[in-house]
Image (tube, rainbow, N blue to C red; front, side, top):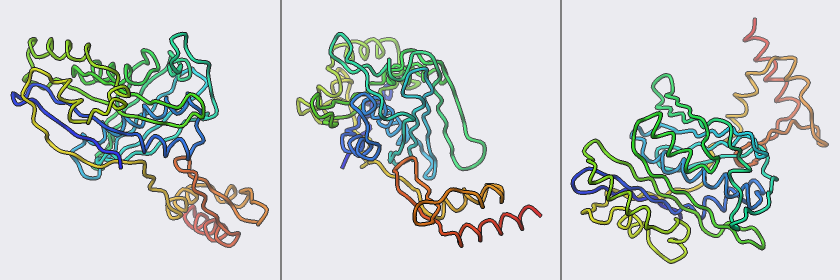
Length: 298
């Protein structure tokens, strides 16, 4: 099971979270039949959403990250709850691009360099809070860092990584870090953090070396006394159900309900975009829904 830890410096100036998201990214890869490039792109977004979702204080709150770039992947979406459990999808999971000259996956080229990142927090108590920024690279981590700097004026370091097998494309390691300055941070603390981050390996390199999440946070906050706040298990989880699809179908006009296409067994087939689970509706069920819609519209 994947996990997230949160740490804070004893002087209250910096907070660092770290996640091992290997299993949840592998799960997403298998569910969506992702290529190496789309695995890296969606995996980074899922990892970032899980980290950010786990920071929500309200029990029923959710966080949505949506990236709409001009690259061939189309839009990417990740939704996390306040426990860090996450789900998501990409418009074109089949996209694969050649490696960059440095041998790394071209996530920025696949996502695109022109577009927007939207961050939506829904606390379940009214209108969701939404912020948007222009993409700076399409590499996901840089875009999230830019979001915090411009939308929330919070100095932030975001590092996300997905390592895939170059032969079979399987996701081998995935993880991330989110380090933020708190209101008590002074220039000395920020300078020390900047120096620490510059000396650190990439997230996947640290995981490959066998470093624990605790050790990763201590490296980021080297020179400070560090306290562990909490730890939580996370994973890929979808909350779809036939009841949810029923509610969606009830929003359609009666004429559209009655003309939905059927499969070879004469059933209307609905598919969850987050987990590819199928829900089947008989002609009788669809007719019942159409009748409810007709009565509602009267």
